[in-house]
Structures are given as structure tokens and as C-alpha cells.
Amino acid sequence: MPKTDATSAPFAYDGLDRVIHEKARLGLLTSLMAHPKGLAFADLKQLCGLTDGNLSRHLQVLQEAGLVDVIKGYEGNRPHTTCRLTKSGRRRFLDYLAVLEQLVRDAAKAAGKDAGTATRLGILPA
Image 1 (cartoon, helix red, strand yellow):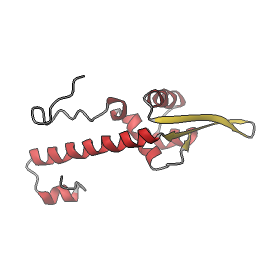
Image 2 (cartoon, helix red, strand yellow):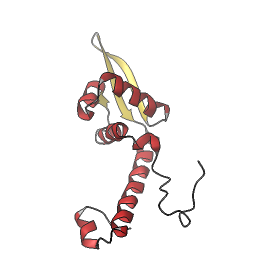
Image 3 (cartoon, one colour):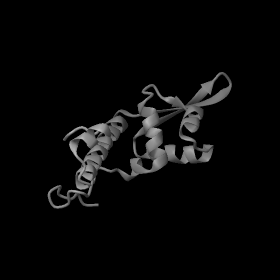
């Protein structure tokens, strides 16, 4: 997909990465961002309200994109899977959030909202 010039297509938001933007993956990345040392598979499953199969598939997509590491091992005699953001995954997620913040600012501006409304929504001026 070709990059668009911000002046010719200001509402294209090319930085809204489709890999990240999917609801379940957005939740997974947010959970992992809040836990830099990583989370156990079971904890991620509970935090994001996913089934084993759904979580596995979304983690596979995120892993293939280089956003997360999935570490499989054992705790005692039981299999244990830990997931954590990669360094580039953390950077990509922060870049994604910056684009999302700009989108919200643009939407508030387009809706004619004043600066007070944006501030109440936690939107910082650009």
C-alpha cells in the first residue's frame, strides 16, 4: 500500500497498523505494554477474554509481525508459555498510539469541539 502525503490525504492515517488495530490484538498489546516482563498465556487469556485457540492465533500473528516473543518452557513438569513485547513491538505500538491520538484530536476538531472538551477527554494539543 503506497504511503500518502499528509497534506494531500490528512485523514488517511497510514500509521494505523492493521496487525495492531484488530480488537483482540490491541487488547493483547495493551496488556503486554502494562507488563514489560511479560505475562503467562493463562493471564493473557483471562485479561483479554479470549479462548485458547483465539489467543494462540492472535499471538501467532503478532509473533510473525515481530511484535511479541512467545517463550515456551516448563514450570516443574507443566508446560508454561510466557509472552512479552519485543523492543521493536513496543516502539511500533507507541507509534501506533501516537497516530491514534492524532486521529482523536482530528475527530474532535472536525466535530467542532473546543479545547476544553479535548482536555477532558485526555487529548493533549498537537
